Length: 96
Image (cartoon, rainbow, N blue to C red; front, side):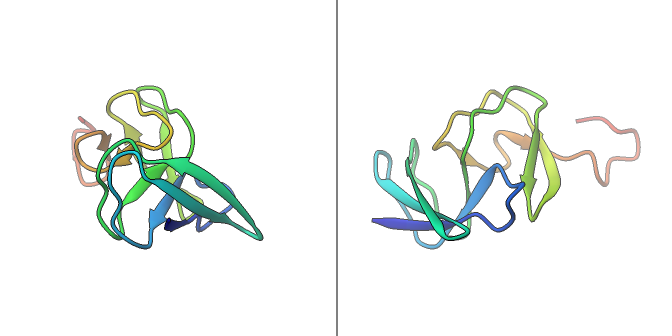
């Protein structure tokens, strides 16, 4: 079974500690507890998996900080990356 780490208690994503395939179960370490999430897509080592359902424009939290917002609706177990996350940082006009 693959493993992932929730870095900060506020996080709504976890970081994968190995590559996973669609349908594979992921053990997510959350402090001293472990949650089990089913991956919905193939996700590479070091990438993010959603721990909660996220609506469009909802903040994506990693390291306890907002790293971006959901560009599309995201379900538990989804891969979170550039295809469904945007960040306003670095955009002078604030556009997506």
